[in-house]
Length: 394
Image (tube, rainbow, N blue to C red):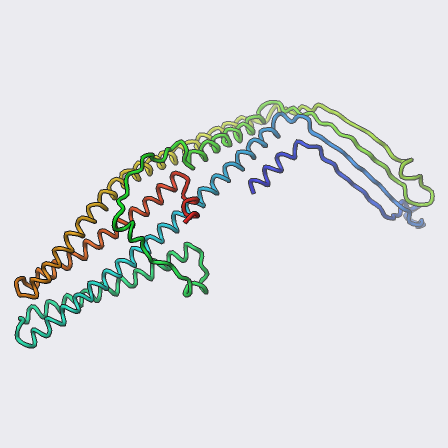
């Protein structure tokens, strides 16, 4: 739309050519209302071709052209921003879906371990080797794990539905739409991301570019209204070619009746008394411009706040990711030791369950930190203005 409006504003500087023609038959007169006689109908014909140009209109066309040009650039920037937001939305939704999928796998693994341990405890209990309280505690823990597993499965389905909706996948295609849940194990296990050397600058942000264009548009729009308070000058010129009555038996030819005329006029319009309407309209336009500029400043302040928050979140998550990796290694070693000692009767049931819960929790924290970091990297690419290129290249 803004591109079409820009084209309209541009061609207003060019001359306008208008053609008007009329051909037909008509009855021209009646002799008397009381004793009417109806003459035969006669031919009527007119042809007019006019070329007009506004040489000067008090700067209105130039200002409108500038506004249209700025709007075109503004809407193009907004389009790029909305496209980047969509990439971030889909990308973050995908990582959230991967997170729920991995958490579901952790829940299944934990449930399988509990189920295996429960079978052993049940066998020992039936043989009189385990106490009833250990058997009941295991059974209770297994029931809790089953409930948690069911909730995790529902969470996966919900995140998948949200992702497909954001991707605009048609309902008829959603069931057969495949989404990869494979995680880069090398990146997940070995690579530790570092803080970015260069952080996005507010000066190059989408919102800053939009703000600069919007301020220019606001100022020029207000000036159009303020111009009406003063005398309005216009310089118009035109050439007209007219001819008529060139059809019928008793008429001259098309060229013989033709007339060529031109005009050039300086027009001045000035309202002497309007009881302050134009003055107040000018003040209204100025106040609206101030309100719009205040809204722009508010948007930029929020963007600056988002950038600062993103910097803090990245620093925290990168550190949290490193700590979570170390914690998982410790919990894996701890659980392996507890499991071996439990089989030999050296530790109690509660120690084993606690170790398993700690191991599961460490896995959850690592995956949560990993995918949170991936989501923040998408936010970083969005604010840098590179997310579409980075996503498209994958």
